[in-house]
Length: 248
Image 1 (tube, rainbow, N blue to C red):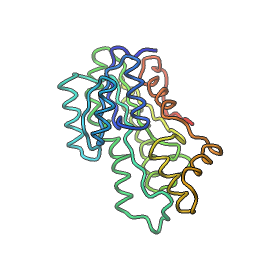
Image 2 (cartoon, helix red, strand yellow):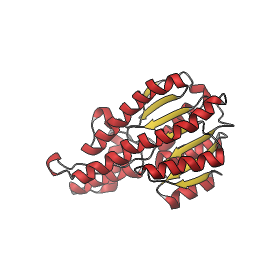
Image 3 (cartoon, rainbow, N blue to C red):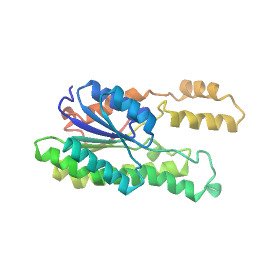
Image 4 (spheres, rainbow, N blue to C red):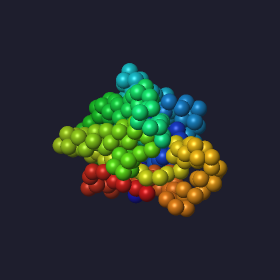
């Protein structure tokens, strides 16, 4: 499988699953564009993969629009959008104590951010289709969207991402843009590990031992495992793949 000749915009590409996806897509021949709010690590990831970096705030429509305008000016079109940017806050907070501002922030980043990225990237994807390409959007939801989450806000927000992807697939499919939603399970990202550590501390347990125990009992996958799936989905080999996909 090759990604030669493809230009891929990976939002949230500074760390975690996004970073692993940037690295793998570049290894397989793609031109990668990394966008993230985390400027320091985003620039490093882009440089290591011979890509370009753009700082973006996915909750700010003006910022997302400016990103896509910059990409249009430098690359003309994109063949794929991979939206991995997301946050998790409020883990294990009872609903009666849940801060509405925290709830809104998580939904704004995860759900509204995914919508804004897709909205402004779609014209660039349509240019790829007009040039004979097979454009694709991949959104990152979560197993928490279907099985429940440690955070009311996170579970809700990722459920919104899954529904957004289904709606986009139905509406953009006839226009030649394939849409997939990937729902990772327990992956060793900084976000997931911090949740395990937080729960351990609340119970007076050793965080590192808790992480080891979690891995033994529930399993922890590596970001590269999800990245391999994402790299496949943005390739032409995945042209027949539709709908949502769950991973470990």
